[in-house]
Length: 160
Image (cartoon, rainbow, N blue to C red; front, top):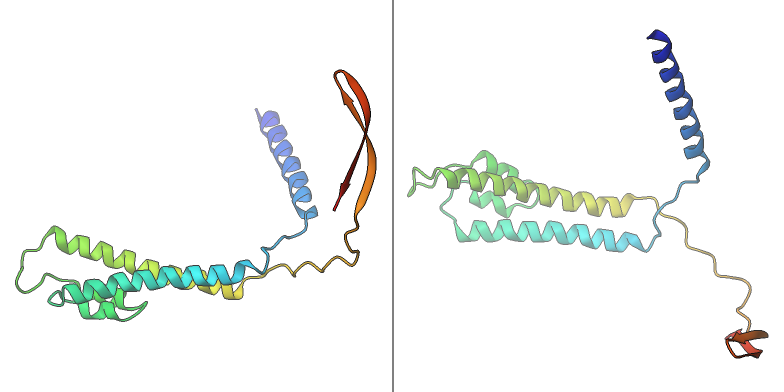
């Protein structure tokens, strides 16, 4: 039993070593620099939409405790979560209290996540742009054989 376990351990360790050697051979690849503005704009859009939803909720239900804090970007949902309670005119809000808490957490995560995406766009490593080809594209024309079911011949093919 010990021999089988030892053989299995040896096989796994040898396989892992060869797999690590294969991974080390590949060069690191980064996204092109054209991704950067799209990533920043996408992150800011996510943050803006989440903030807009929270602001709309704060404007729509001003009597709810903590709703005024939703007007503060990024940290507002977390402050509002600490003040989450039933409204004075609805002391037994039950499920609504938990739903509002859940939506406040989602709003805070979306705002923070959007800023994280925008930050990734600002600080990420990108590949350098490709240098333009020094050799101009030439027009090429050459003859090529044409073989069909009932005949053969020559044609001209090329790049323009």
